[in-house]
Image: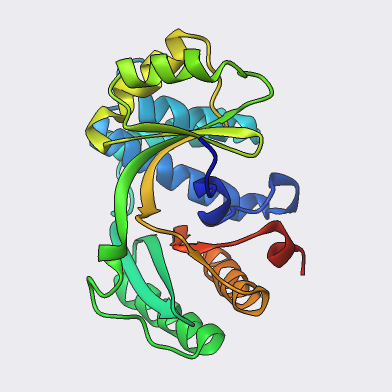
Length: 247
């Protein structure tokens, strides 16, 4: 079933070739730390950690960096403690959520507020102001050119507890409840289905179509947020198109 692409509307992390290596490694280290903290340091038993490690290896993150991040997550190595914060806001009628991991809440709060004010002309909203427009879901993005049998893929996903599978251009997108994430991921791996993306994140309950000017403004705002070292993900309920990104 065709539909809007969640993958295109979740904050587009810049291509690896365009990213500053230090910033990219820092963000990936935090993914690993949180995954290890939540599920333990053994990637064989902790699929989110395994996926985070795979992403780090894909961009040639040094083995020592990966191992240090795992040990910090499990508490074997002393290090900074990260707080997880979500900022919310409404930009030209479009909802935006910002996930942050920071070792200095006061510093980050001031810097994120400044981005909101300078780039969008608004202050961050109160907690819950736009959160109700999103839901926490596991999302798996699969290259349809490599795995084209939609019925087979749907069978694997639904048998593992997934909620839905949709076709979006040249990808399949599978969604599930967060509690089912590891089960679905394991089922896909067991069937040799490669995932372009596999994470638990906020998805818009309903995506909004916006005109090009609003879309460009939202993308510029999201890019500015994503450039901040402490920002891990930015989500929107706007239906952002390739045309908007290109302009």
